[in-house]
Length: 232
Image 1 (cartoon, helix red, strand yellow):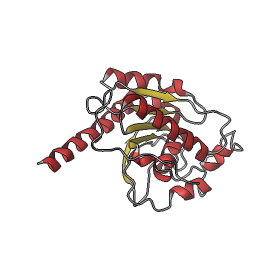
Image 2 (cartoon, rainbow, N blue to C red):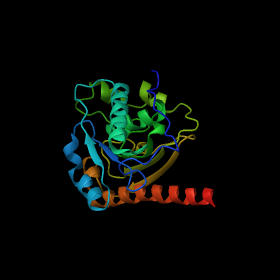
Image 3 (tube, rainbow, N blue to C red):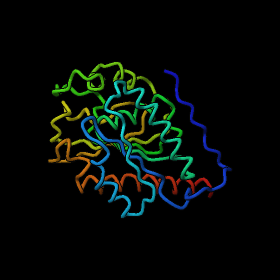
């Protein structure tokens, strides 16, 4: 699959609507059996704490290929950048949504656009659980050793996106639970363990929401420190 071209941001481009004066836009991607309404509380939390551009994306339940969903995500990210004037965005993906976002960032050149990807209960190594809808092609792509999981295990040199993985010791759909962490030598990753929160509760848990805000805010502090150091 050919990468979706993403123009590299120009350092001399003029500031547009809020770039440089607000948090990057945040795009929320739901899991297989949900829709964007699962992010009502998280979106409200981010807006309350200073984020101005927060959107939740619905992808079609008729989608049968994670790669195609990742391509569509890339188009939506480009639209957000055009509307807001920001050159990069942050993504938060629950379960399948996190895997779609990772495929876009890692395999389709989306790291030029995605600053930080936060995943919640995402089967980065594939999950051995056998849900009732296991015949669905998207579910098969989330199993260990599927073509998609194998693609994501390939080398990804110079991937710019930072990955923050929230995983729960009580996640019934991640088998084993550690599969929700990223184990990849080329990627910049951090894992956050959550105790006592089930798979479907991750997007609506208050402590997880606070952790997401902290993770996104920490990336901005790191960028500002790096910028100050380079100027000095």
